Image (cartoon, rainbow, N blue to C red; front, side, top):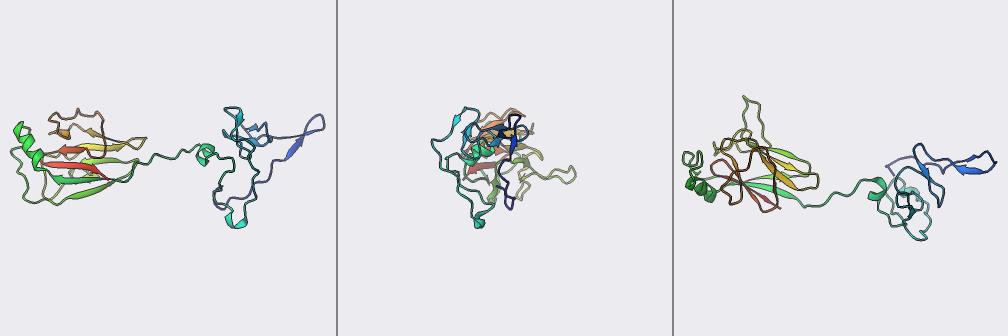
Length: 230
């Protein structure tokens, strides 16, 4: 029940043409064949009858006990064993733990790009010192990776402006996106120098999502590496 919600009265029976009484279903609802309670969801709120499967969800479920005043408005355990997620239609999202994106200057990546004559690999010197940066990742996020540009109105969520600054990183370089199932993908936005995954020397295809997971490394610019970690 919602917090502080008024307690709803029991369904009122209405007279039939034959003089008997029968519960009246709510608008768009239906009557439970076991207890006669109106309901619009998949399960009966009283005895857990499954309208879709057309059978009770529990054998001989115990009757509901009255909720004490001190617990009014709080979620109560269901005696029939049916989860609240099944009743409300809101499944519990999968837990993938807390992830972070760790950004650092990667000498191995810089040398690998120089060995294949990647653009800007030789012209951008490896920094003498670059502090590690960390960004929290949360489900549902779409994070722009790049370098801030006030004149163009670009404010990346993963801002690699520096100092020191890897000028091989485009202002709008890539996007790190959370998917509906809690996983992550990275999309190169047609950057000048490409986006690379792990040890591959082949850049990602622009505008094509590539799945990434904990432990993967995303390389951008001349020496910038981002590691997904818990």
